[in-house]
Amino acid sequence: MSLIFNRLRTRRTAAAPSGGCPYAHAHAPGAFPQPVPALFPQTPQTPQTVPTPAAQTSAAQAPAPAAAPAPAPQTPASQTPAAQPPEPQLPDPQLSPAPPPFTDPGRAAEFIRQFHREQPAAGDPQPRLRAVLDEIDRTGSYRHTPAELAYGAKLAWRNAARCIGRLYWRSLVVRDLRHLSSADDIATECFEHLRTAGNSGRIRPVVSVFAPDRPGRPAARILNQQLVRYAGHRVEDGVVGDPAGAVLAARARDLGWKCAEDRFEVLPLLIQERPGERPVWYGLPDDTTLEVPLSHPGYEWFAELGLRWYAVPAISDMTLEIGGVRYPTAPFNGWYMGTEIGARNLADADRYDMLGTVAERLGLDTSSDRTLWRDRALIELNIAVLHSFQEAGVTITDHHTESERFLKHVAQEKRLGRPTPADWSWIVPPVSGGLTPVYHRYYDPVDPDQRPAFVAREPW
Image (tube, rainbow, N blue to C red; front, side, top):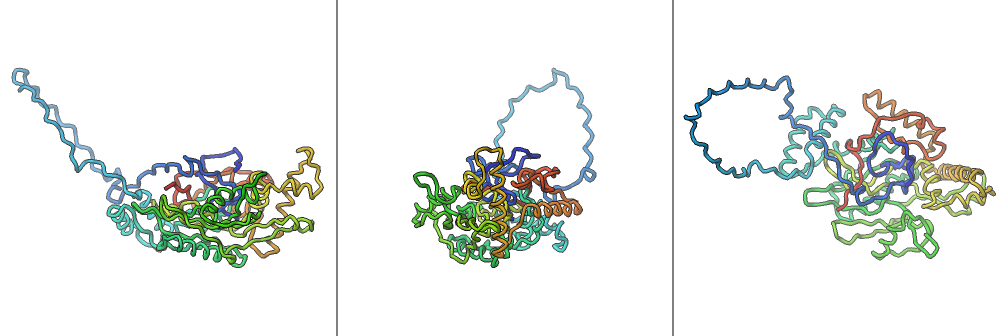
């Protein structure tokens, strides 16, 4: 469940939110569409404002319109006084439009009502709603209670239209770290996040939520796409390592990071506290990076390829948005689905591009595409990934099992009267899609304005 990136199949049922599946199911972490000037800065759509309690008078309760007054009697033209020029109208300062609040009160009200509706033990939503709207009116934003934050983060996973692993949304471990905003503190807790999520191989879904953006005070940003990622090093004849990590590796070197230019060299963590400030880099401690060396159950030579992959796919460049409050530093993870590693990270031509090497070692005829040598090499590569993680005792799932689990999630949500928006092109696995049950159906349309959600992070 890498749960949580380039070539998408073109078949779509609805426009999907920008960015990739927050939990990277069915697509590799490196296959998220890369931010472009108008995408991972796309302008958020304007939400419909939810009226405050005072404005919720129903049409039946509204007073009937007054009858039109009878026309005044006509005055003879000879008795009509001379028309006077109108006096100039000065703008009323009290009627000048005020700037919108930093946090949309409509979004806030919508979330508070949903929280109380789905959590009946929270009681009547009206007192909390009044307090939230008053806080927004006074300060421009508001602070979630710990319970609101935890449930909102879980709803963001449940709403992730590109994620196939949503069956377990209720099990998400939410770490409330909103009191932390410095780069040093964020780095320390990101390392703890990896230890907690790694859990000696029994991977746990975790999100760590740091300080939100506030009026006039943008929060710190993690510049890495994931907390753990391999570097790419540009050399004369190409890239050593992961090409998807080349840009960040170059930036880290400019900041003073010393690298060894290995094929699987873990990138440092880069954190920027304020707009325009120089980022700070932090090397990941050894005990935070659980890695699995890859071997194959039927080919001893496979281990000689020297392939490996990390166990915790923790996305760190998206914003968690709950009730209008934006948390731009909120890394989160699930566990890998095997195809994300075997069919994307290691197989894509713009990543590790291992299919040719595997095909050669298998002795396949690569002279024509009609021999399906890529398909055969791809299957063996995925077998190696699943075998190796299982042998190492590290949580991973296969695409057949995860497809069945997703349809179970869809059925559960239907029984509760809730839709399950899903982007078909991301839900269907990149290997043997037609053999999985998720291929043979359509899903509820995707609403890119649905919140809570993990969304593309806006630029400074």
